[in-house]
Amino acid sequence: MTLGHGTTSTIRTVAFAAGAAALAVASTFGLAAPSGATGSTPAPKVIYSEGFETGTGTAALLLTGYTGAGGITYGADSAWLQHCNGVVLNSSTTTAVTAAPLNNCDTAGPADTTALDNLKLLASALGTFNGSSSPSQNQALAAYTEANPGAGKVEITNTTPITVAASGGRFYTMSVDGAAVNCSVAGAVAPAYQFELGTSGTTLPAIGAPVTGCTGQTVGSGASAIKVDTYGTSSATFFRGTQLQFALLNQQGSGGGNDAAIDDLKLYDVTPSLAKSFSDTTRPVGGTTTLTFTVTNTSDLLAKTGWSFVDKFPKGLTLAEPTVGGTCTGTSSASAGDSTFSFTDGTLPAGDATCSITLTVTSDTAGSYVNGPDNVTASGLNEPGPTTVTFVAPTVVPSNPTLPNTGAPSPASGNGAAFTVTATGLAGGGLVMVLVAARRRRRTRSAA
Image (cartoon, rainbow, N blue to C red):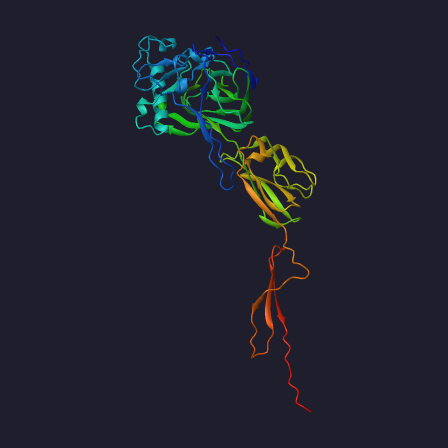
């Protein structure tokens, strides 16, 4: 079945030529969200990877006959499943050029192995690139365009949804290793890869702009030189569902060149993390402290737009004033006396490692206030760990205290007795007072 795609649309509904298990079973990949923390930017987390290494051996397979790890199946536009396209193989493949699926090549005859030889070279070059100990055994999805496939057609899409945990929204990116041959041939064109990612079975939005192949390091030389590189999305997509579907399109419609293979297709979670802290963790009742929210990007430093959170303060903790500071861009809601703060439409600009939001909070009641992950409802952010502030009431000294005698006076010296009074719980620390009670000396009068 041919995919119903136009050539210029950047948003499309994916239908596909697929294997028998299409959309039958969802495969789940682990997604452990890190705890909120500031500091260095964490690396993107790989939540899905396809290296085309599952159960193929020395037999070439058409993409629709391949099943990946976790039972994932795949489909493509019909143009990328014929004319030497859509073949999973390695350089040790023994399938004859006259046998399926290689017999769909428009070669000069049964003895012409040019297309097959190039498919094998592409798979081996990708094995060298990814550090395989046996590049000749490296599997890849290869294409040697013997006809014009047409622009905007899907080379690969998952027909089994990738299930991720619902968490109010996550940010994702994708990458693929690509190897291209005939890059230096006059008049030949390079692949133009376009990534799409969205909810399975619905319209898939494009992620970033198309990425041109025929770049990166060179493997081999002369007419058989191959360009190999990793191609990734230039932006992140914000996804709120649980059933992921991706598509890798080729926006290059010509078959003059456009000869390439792909490997190590990966999906990354690049969700930023939220952390919070108090500037002063101990304050007098009625005093104030600054509550800082820090949003930390992942190491890709791509822009992350659309995140939000609501923080419901512990009972007794309120905003001291409506002023919201910091460097994050978004919409905030804050009024003096509020016990809830919200921030929506947040943006972490491309190239920025962190941004911050600051508030001033207070309490009229003594006690310790823990503001933790249970207080926060977040979307597009990993939730923070806990932070604590304590408000302390001053100790009141009675107006007529009974003062303890801290030392007996020396009779010989005639000095007074020393008493010490300590007042605690006061702003700025305790106050120590030493009182000296004067001792009156008796004088002996002589008899008149």
